[in-house]
Length: 255
Ligand SMILES: Nc1ncnc2c1ncn2[C@@H]1O[C@H](COP(=O)(O)OP(=O)(O)OP(=O)(O)O)[C@@H](O)[C@H]1O
Image 1: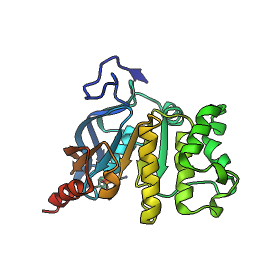
Image 2 (image 1 turned 120 degrees about the vertical axis):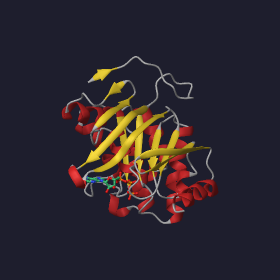
Image 3 (image 1 turned 60 degrees about the horizontal axis):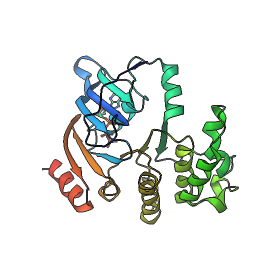
Image 4 (image 1 turned 45 degrees about the vertical axis):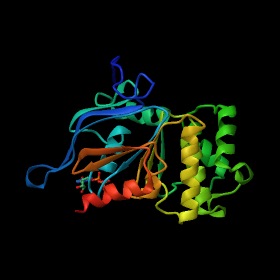
């Protein structure tokens, strides 16, 4: 793993972005079947901010997220988490980096059914042999509003509550970046609004950094900034988005 001392070009007051991609190219397959899922993306994700990634189906959103999070590797270009460049890291180093520096929330909650909510929340720390920071964990649990549900198993919780457990699990290690891929895709609109409000709070009140991949303009409107991808390229960005502005921009892709 290599590090860089170069400073940020982002508008954030932080010197180093939480994550960034430089001329990122990801090609799947070869020959006639080759697909360029990312076609030269350069973007910095500022620390302490909520960034949403949107774009038409197949535009490269998940690929960008997976490459930024060390779940997949670029064909060329660079990705950084903080000042760590991921391209030179071994698979084992990437696994450690994900465990120690990143948090994940997916559409399917991925909770272990035999464990209580509390046990699910601390499972990644337990697997890593790390003692939880009790004060931080208490803050996380009260922020997600689960203090009276900690002994329940996932089957005894609503979908929205299960996703809150997954958010708390992602935050337990106090990660540098949380990546959320369609986290409200399995929720009704009321539960979705609750989880999105919680994600917003985790950025505003807890100072976390969040990257959200979504199809939903209402979800993207919770972000500080929306990045728009099309055909593997970063084609637009929108600060302080409203649902209507995001919707209008998405509709232009269909024209
Ligand atoms: N493992 C893979 N093998 C081959 N092609 C892939 C693979 N993963 C993604 N692709 C292709 O790369 C392109 C970008 O896919 P990606 O999943 O990143 O898009 P997306 O914007 O997240 O799409 P969606 O909104 O439908 O989830 C698509 O053309 C997709 O078919």
